[in-house]
Amino acid sequence: MKFGVVVFPGSNCDHDIIYVLKKVFGKDVVVLWHKEQDLQDCDLVFLPGGFSYGDYLRSGSIARFSPIMEELIKFANSGGYVMGICNGFQILCEAHLLPGALLHNDNHKFICCNSYILPQTNNSFATSLLQIDNPVKIPIAHGEGRYYAPDDVLKELNDNDQVLFRYCDRFGNITREANPNRSAENIAGICNEQRNVIGMMPHPERAADAELFNTDGKTIFESIFDQLKVII
Figure 1: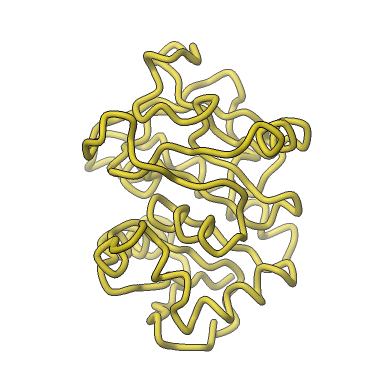
Figure 2: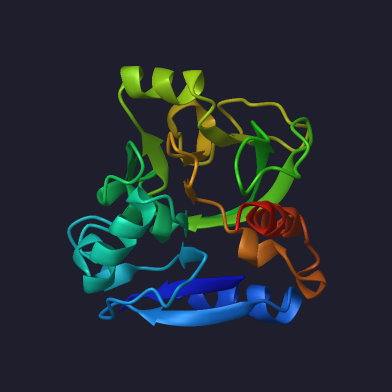
């Protein structure tokens, strides 16, 4: 099982993911520079958080046209597994691999704090081992994390079981007060209809090591390994 982590100019969470995959879980990881056009036979490709190309124009809007994205789009459209975290989620939306968009936070400020998210389904490669009624504490760090989609798209996401996480309080209550950026319907993560592309704003890689006093994100990675072991 081989994992790729794409690095764009301005990525700053790439080494966080690489560390968790390599050091915490002992997985085979390759770094994929944005100018490359070879995914090196990876089974799953991560798009990490950060500020690709300085977040000029819109977050992810320039990275979407990096050379490697042409191959990644082909990979995803042919059923390959892709996961975008924070800026990676923004890039996936810009590339139209996921529906909707990530807008400026409602308060127009950068938010960096722990957040609670409630898994909404086990029917995805990143949530299969999570408990639906058990909120997990995962850090967020973004300025443009407010998920938006038109009402008809939101209905499709709900009807197709594509909403993976919603912001909640520590008891699992999905409320306006627990929604840090005022995302539509408290949405914190989604997948595509084919269920092979996932995007989420919170950073599970920052909650997967005991030294950080938070390992709530480990089950997300364990879900990925468990599902890919069956599929691949």
